[in-house]
Image (tube, rainbow, N blue to C red; front, side, top):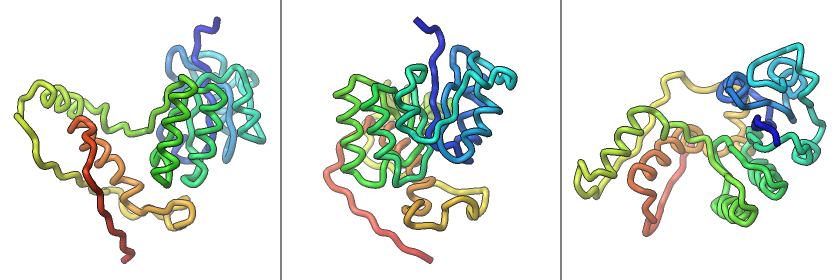
Length: 217
């Protein structure tokens, strides 16, 4: 039985590079084994290794694939990170779950509620783990506030407001201005973190109704 967790990356783009791949490559007990999409071969050479640290001379132990189906068929892969474009999340995630892989998906989880529900149902049916990259939950401040809320430090809560401010300017790279690919604007890009954090802190209550509006300046 392997002592390391084998990880496959579907969607080797900028988000994977900035947020996950380097950290995963340096984690003890984790081995980056498979790559598909975008800069797959580059990632393989730079980060792929059988051990728990970045090791260029051992990159041949990792593989880059021409199709995600072949990656999911690789028995060396236990967990899959999905960092593909938004419209492909549902397709890639369900395929990974049905292949018996645990999945970490970059937000947004999906571009429709129906797709998200099907993903959760598939994970439960297959007995594997599915989570979304809402890293705000793991900040020290969020963890401390979560504990205080569970201990009743603030009594009963009846109102919460979630907001997000971007301090890096308007994103001009990648697919940010392509509605067919990125669709959802700042709400789907940043607001999803604020909403997730608020719902999680409030114990993931079930809303009675939801309304929303969008506009383009």
